[in-house]
Amino acid sequence: MVAWPALSLLLLSCSMRHIVYPAPPVSVPDPPRPLRSLSWRLGDGTQVSGWVHDDQALVQGRPAVLFLHGNGENLETMRQVGLFDQLLALEVPFVALDYPGYGRSTGVPSEASLLEAGSVALEWMHQHYGGRPIVVVGWSLGAAVAIGVVAANPDRCDGLVAMSAWSSLADVGVSHFPRWLVEIAVADRWESTEAATRVGCAGLVIHGSGDRIIPVEQGREVAKALGADWLEVRSAGHNDLLAHDIVWRRLLAFLGSIQPPSSPDGPSGL
View (cartoon, rainbow, N blue to C red):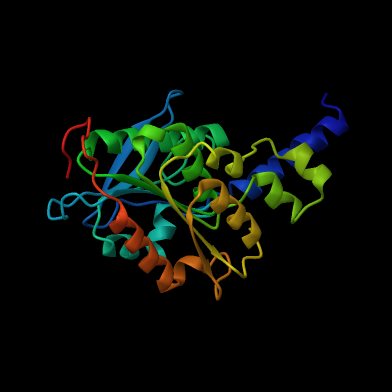
């Protein structure tokens, strides 16, 4: 028999995990054209799904983008709100990833599994887009994944864009819950400010000044640690940040500033 304190802690931990990784109960169909579906296998056998855009007509030399979504999204909800239309308008190859436990991806979401998934997708991109610079772009939870993936793979990335980034998951937690609860119930740390000190590529951090979920001060802290360009969108909160045209204009300009690798060590890609 499980003791009541242990059972209570288990239930509390499960509840907090759902808050961090609330995978939406929305099924992911086959992608719309011109996208195609692709999957990668992680070390434990988990199958991670993504949608890929690599049209032959795309301009050579422009960056390829790895896009990492927020914690309450999957590929289909991204499609429903028009995010793929915005990504297609950038006219670059891109991969959008569903985390373990999200959409068609199997497995369980955790800091370790999300970072592995991002790293595996990044390695695939390096092999297929060797003639292009690679930029990792993430929003909210995806910003933490992006920073962690780039920190772990410094020779695979030429640019990083972190939108609505937190300094650490614990810092976000204590702005909404008692510190003792966060320290007991949240196992994953997502120390983005610390990871940012190990990132050496060009960076851009974008944050809404009215963000009530991840305070803008945390975004500024991450930008400082990265030595990155900073854009504060004064009319934006958290969930509406990507609805502001200035975000996409600044992202497009940042992509245009990233130069092709001078001596790529992979095959020339699309």
